[in-house]
Image 1 (cartoon, helix red, strand yellow):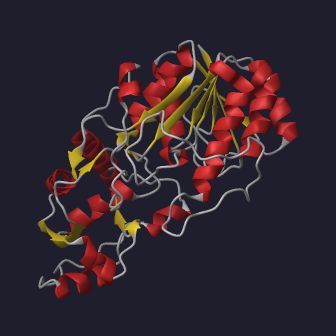
Image 2 (cartoon, rainbow, N blue to C red):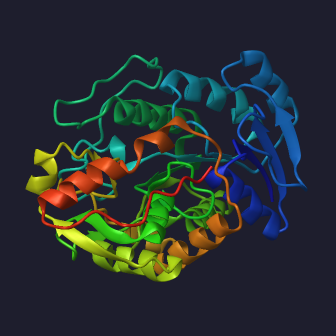
Image 3 (spheres, rainbow, N blue to C red):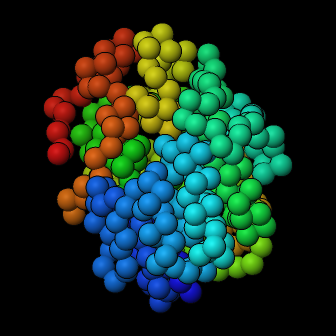
Length: 350
């Protein structure tokens, strides 16, 4: 099997490459070389996918059985369309990593692959779309919906669309799980949003990579939601974070209304928390039927902590700075709830 990975220097792209090498596949990675080193044992083509000359040069180094696109997150539909059209003569299939944000009902409604999508042209530029007053829909969702349309228009029934929600695991650069682990390590009173039984269903980056590779090797196309089929409660999640880090802490469960009064931003200042009812109601049964296998989330927590302890350093990304509540703000809210601030000073990790 010969594949082309668009990206490959970090997180999901790197996991895809490592998984492909473990299968004995021939791998080419195309990226700018700015976001971390790709694994050894592959062919690397340097270039910018927004440059038509670079795309033409890349296509000449084919053919491939499949392209796996892990790097189109912040790119316009027009950019994705240009890459797909340039590589179509050299590629048999296209596996495209999209997002659940493409759904009209995200994050307020339960979702299946048959749920209505946001409407965006396949050749839209980066200005297309809008973000609603309550944070949904998002311009990002419109952009990704247009990108999906670009891939389907070019590869038709040889296009596979993957729609993950939250991806966690070793190498995570957004910082959701790493922040919670470092906060658990610090101990003391830990602020979290009630209820503790709220289920979450993030997936491990290695399981997403394995499914992407499986889809690259099979015939046929289609779209798949990627979410953990066995959700863990946020209480169980934080309890395991405390256990694995050895943090001498305890969780203080705050009513979401109290957090709102103190201006705590959902999803970023309080990672993995959002009050919209559909956030963790993503049906992944179609992917499971097609072979998606998810390791326990506790294993993802364990492995991410081991990576951090081994001086794991994610690729620097501006989104990481958005995640996690500042210690002084957390302490003020805890004090208002009648809990003394942590006696453990904040630990700075470079």
